[in-house]
Amino acid sequence: MATFTSITQHQSISSSLYQKFHDSTHPYSSKSSLSSSLMVSSARTPAGSLHYRGSPMGLSIRNAATKQAKSPAEEEWKVKREVLLQNKVRSVDVKEALRLQKENKFVMLDVRPEAEFKQGHPPEAINVQIYRLIKEWTAWDIARRAAFAFFGIFSGTEENPNFLQEVESKIDKNAKIIVACSAGGTMKPSPNLPEGQQSRSLIAAYLLVLNGYKNVFHLEGGLYNWSKEDLPLVSEE
Image 1: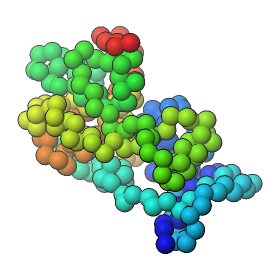
Image 2: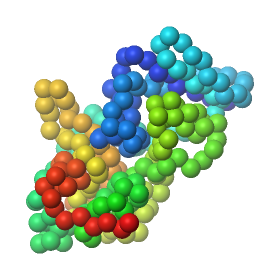
Image 3: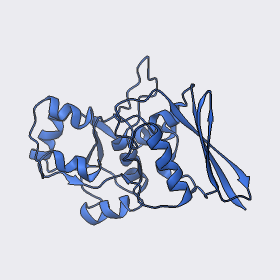
């Protein structure tokens, strides 16, 4: 018996999975916006097939692959935010981040995919991607690729299982780290976002805090604001 995984497009939007497909705050997609979301559920089936079922509401993709157990990075944003606040993770704007990097030897950790990093990044930034292109070809991975492709996304990503090990190999746990991604996200509440909005950098900061890093900061506005303020960027292409 294998776990039966169903991925279904609906008109209603699941807030947690919408975040997983929103580019500016979410690691999985290279699109700037999506009009639909993916709902994922599990059941049991003796079959081992992958099939597609069209409906007036959208697309269903089912396969008999075994989905991995939820990782810490997939924890609800509400839980992540509370941990970040309890551990006094502070957001800094881009100009302050540049000053801290220059004057106080803060380390800039850029968690974007390697290709984005090479296009342009702050000087001396260290790249460890928290999400990477989907590499495997199990039935579950094929289903995920198909789901991404349905939305015109042909570079779907998955969590980098070696993220923490790679960070530890490059950055000392006592270092002062500013974590950066494209859009940054925010922990600040607002009328439309009472709990703020998560992002790749905030997810990374959460993982670092859970694993003993004590001096973790977050780049407010991300590399989008960095570029908008015309701060220095280095290209490797």
